[in-house]
Length: 546
Image 1 (cartoon, rainbow, N blue to C red):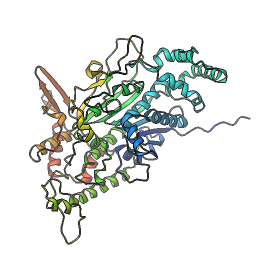
Image 2 (cartoon, rainbow, N blue to C red):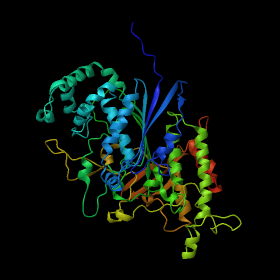
Image 3 (tube, helix red, strand yellow):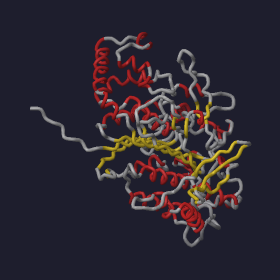
Image 4 (cartoon, one colour):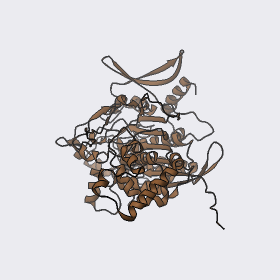
């Protein structure tokens, strides 16, 4: 008598990939990134709109250049991107070992971890989720996956894939023919793969991909005298594009980042090809610009462990709350834990205010005294708390364009005009390992970019306060105005005029409070809204009818 397997509980499989040199699973104390914050505040289970209960399981992946490596090796991996393929394969393996048909897949990441998360999602949406026992032949499949030279097609639309499923040998296999039992194993897999076409199709769906500031290909810096784009081309087989199998895609982007190696990698919704396709609901895409440099957007700045020159995590908390708000319809979070974490952060701001005075000129005595903790009855070590330290998104930023990066050419980010590295392929289908030219995203599709209102608030405050501080480099030349429809204000928008060209981007609308927790407004309330913040948001809410 055969024993039937009990029905499995539906699961949400959440993949979280941290940034370069960032790890929350080491012996060293660290400031958590937004990736860590998100996975630590996920509820163990949640209900969807139909009240169906979902188990939520999390896979956390430390960034490239972490773990038990020597310092030199950590720096080498961080600089070259080596180890990224391993991270992708390990995350995919976790999905395979836990997936049942009907489960939902989520991918989150920051920086190069964002690239990893997008690569994992691309692999899933391309080949689907294998059964655990089929991972025995995954190395052969992944080897072929890396041979896909057509960056505009999915691997499963390539000739390499067709050769694989039809049992034909590719060029590499002809040179090193597979013999014996492994060849039989591959042939059996190919037969079974065709029989399981329905399973493969449903397993290609990814519910959400949420990332903080995906950086140009791999973030490998081009110095003034040399180019590393050839090294980046080695990893160009990864599918990080947005496709119809990804239901929702969200990205937070940094306005103030100027390092050439950290140019943003935006998604785009492809333009209609003119070829008839099966009707499928288009992906939801939202990419929002925030003030700050790369680390301000993704979080995890170690400044709080060193000089504490202000709240470098303030903007990261805002982008974290924004991401929570975006994905809250699809994932359940520990709301009490989130509120407590936000309160702890507010307490930390009080300590920063007492232990630093970074806005005032200092002599050596004043500088030395600023490192002494506050002692009761001796008074505060600072003469004042600067008004931008505790405002909404007005905390201190440190220019990331320094150190070795100062040897590169500064590149100011251009909202609405971003480019992407486009892999160059010769007539024989070979990748170019010399250079990857930039191409305008507008040539390929729609990016659905918006600007967060915190940028307007910060810019307004800084215009009348501090000089020399970072404040929205990417918005220089931009102006903000009301957008009207039938004489009624429907939202605010930003625009820039260059000659005869006018570029417009809508301003992101912070949702009004309803039955579901509003994480963005909760973040502001916990920190204690100032009069200016309340008036600023009230003006927007009234204008758009909230």
